[in-house]
Image (cartoon, rainbow, N blue to C red):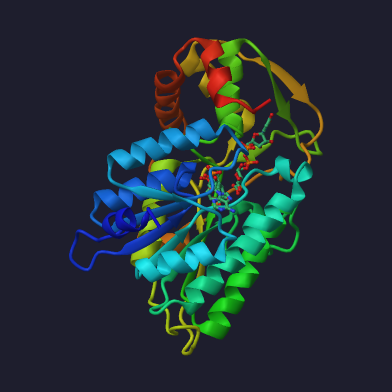
Amino acid sequence: ASWEKQVRHSSTPRRPNGFSVLVTGAAGFIGSHCSLALKKRGDGVLGLDNFNDYYDPSLKRARQNLLSKHQIFIVDGDLNDAALLTKLFDVVPFTHILHLAAQAGVRYAMQNPQSYVRSNIAGFVNLLEVAKAANPQPAIVWASSSSVYGLNTENPFSERDRTDQPASLYAATKKAGEEIAHTYNHIYGLSLTGLRFFTVYGPWGRPDMAYFFFTKDILQGKPIDIYKTLDQKEVARDFTYIDDVVKGCLGALDTAEKSTGSGGKKRSPAQLRVYNLGNTSPVPVGRLVSILEGLLGTKAKKHVITMPRNGDVPFTHANVTLAYKDFGYKPTTDLASGLRKFVKWYVNYFGMEPSKGTQRAGETS
Ligand code: NAD
Ligand code: UGA
């Protein structure tokens, strides 16, 4: 195929004993940041993304352009395309997979439940099947989610808390991913590390997330909805800045053990790990809005809804002791500083003219 030459080139490590990493979801928010960070330190990177239109694909193409300036190539393809994935592994002996491709977003699961099953369950299994058959087998680090804690009331959340009360189909598919990972580790000796990200935000972020479309709506003078919990408290999130999450992803890759099987055969158990990657400091949504108002110099038209949003959990709060112990994960960016960087990027990307943001950030309402 025409991509073969570029693929070989773009995935060649440039540091001694560097990794060769397949990054799925590389045109996405977290995937694009991680790809750049890996490349900058000298690892070989190849991206995979299907550029779907869950949110404005022009933003994914813009991230792709940024990556291509750094000689990172993204193959346009789907996780469910087994022949393509097998071919990629034939061309490049990947040492690692950073699996970030998924159908994200909590509320959209009410509109299009099958897209979650397709990408987060079927697509994940497809990728694991190909990884299992590869020789050598790559170590896999993949995106789980804070949403697996669902209605857990322990505060903060630690990895051993219960995860059997998902509040959305998105959460259920992420939880299913963790169970599926367990079986592939158990039977085939695949090295698997799951990262439970907590509401990640920052430059090049996702237009379907609240901080992003609140910014757009405040600039346009449109009202924003603020939901409450069932007992009329403010909803809070452990908003985590992208650069902290990137460091966590790289730390997890660096400490991933090798898989113990090869070519579909196993067998001593390799590691299966799951970590929280959060900020350890939950912030109520009202506070998020007031920080944005300050940065944008405009008051929001707040519309308070005295009901929880379908699929929402009342709060998230990460305990990150385990990630700190195993790979030194330590979040360093508070919400105000991180949002300042986001707003700077937003204004630069869309311009301050509110209507421009509508055309390009699309779909959110
Ligand atoms: P994103 O939507 O920006 O990135 C995901 C990318 O995967 C997109 O570019 C999309 O086109 C691609 N993709 C989706 N399905 C695919 C498929 N079947 N085949 C190939 N490509 C496909 O989302 P993100 O915020 O960067 O999230 C990355 C990962 O982290 C996801 O697994 C998400 O569930 C998880 N996560 C994100 C957050 C957050 O707050 N951003 C929090 C917890 C977990
Ligand atoms: C986010 C991501 O969208 C998920 O992909 C991810 O898996 C999840 O984080 C996670 O941490 O695992 P969520 O925290 O629901 O999910 O992110 P937003 O949709 O941006 O919502 C953030 C907060 O804003 C929530 O408390 C929500 O109640 C609130 N919100 C959202 C409003 O008050 N009004 C809105 O119109 C939208």
